[in-house]
Length: 117
Image 1 (cartoon, one colour):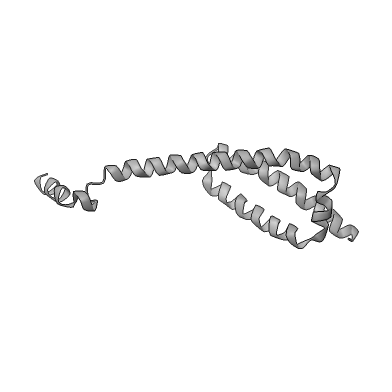
Image 2 (image 1 turned 60 degrees about the vertical axis):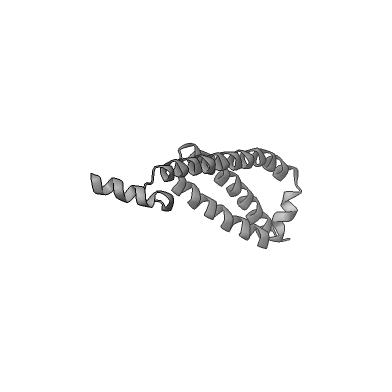
């Protein structure tokens, strides 16, 4: 492992930590567009980390273990919040669909209702 690869591994793991904190921040703001952009950035970073063999070696160091201990609970929190947001979104969509009078099961009733108004 070269010194350059090792330095890149340190930078990548630190960037992963920063991006994880940013994900929490934008999720709390409910800025889903920015959240999804950061998810994409983090995915590209993970791919780059997989290509660098020094990242796996760096992962075994105490320094990286401390970083991982910080990131793992944040990842769990992101997953929990994302699941909550998804469930809330599904409930809202179901509520909107329940008022849709043009849906197939209300098609005839909806058309009569619309003509009489």
